[in-house]
Image (tube, rainbow, N blue to C red):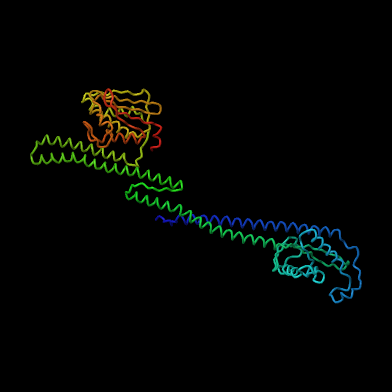
Length: 495
């Protein structure tokens, strides 16, 4: 069972397409922007941390204590502090120099901690200008996340006060040969302001996306209405055509494609209207032409039944009218077939001299009985035409049959090639065509003097025109002449 696809309106399809495109574009912009910001922050922070680390490591190589610290009495004002009763440790003086060196020559901040995650420097008593609380928050987060103090890799850390890139560098100062105390220099860079700026830009981008989305919806609605309305009008026009109303539309669309479609539909309406009228006339004329032999057959049959007329003479007339009726039905069926608007021709290369010779061969017995001679005016070389062989045979056979009815003693058949054109003519030595009949000989059911049923030459015209050629009749000094002209290059697209 064939699956039925859900139909979607043009308005919905346009709206969904535009919104999807906007979402993809803005998501791509936001993703790219944040990726670039994070890359920039990471690259810049790592560069500054490497710079600060390099300065500290270089300082370590040049700063080596020459003597152990000397013990001196602690000033009275510091007796209440928890310091040992000796001078501020010498290794801390070296650590302070490292902190100053790192902070002065890079954008990094620094603090000194011991192996137990205790803050050694700066302290509240020694530095009143630093945010010691934030330093302690960073230290507590390092301890909470159990970051290895001997890790040489840079890492990212977040606190309630901000976000940072940090690195840890081990520093060691020797106080004596027996005592060794390990300390660590924590270098960190505050990236909060940059990330906040990025978040603000993201907020602006989202707001822009929302505004753009609203504008896109309005644009899509206006655009889809502008497209859908003409299509609905054309659909109504097509429905009327289907109902048999072949009135032309008066649409004037601003869009070129829709205007072209409207013009094409109007041309189709003209063709269908013409075809419909021709078919109606055709059936009216056909019914009239068929009625005549039928009435004749019926009348003579009744005469035989009631012994009003001699049976032999009546039978001859009935047979004659039956043959006429049979020929007429055959021609009506054929003309209906060639008038089919969907008919395809089977085009092949044919030598027109051969087709004309076969036509005269079929009519040879009739010509001999009437004392008529066929004469030929053919090119010596082949006259090849790309055509439907059966249709062409029927067309020229009809012209030759028509010539036989009017010729006195001869019929001349010519076949010539002139550049890309093929000219074929059939000329008889009869009385010619009356002036008033000359423009109507190819009209359907038009019968001139000695005319049979008025269909044969109309079939000729239909076949020749289907091959993009033309046929016309004229009077000459000899008699009536029918000329067919076909351009072989114009036939290629028929099949």
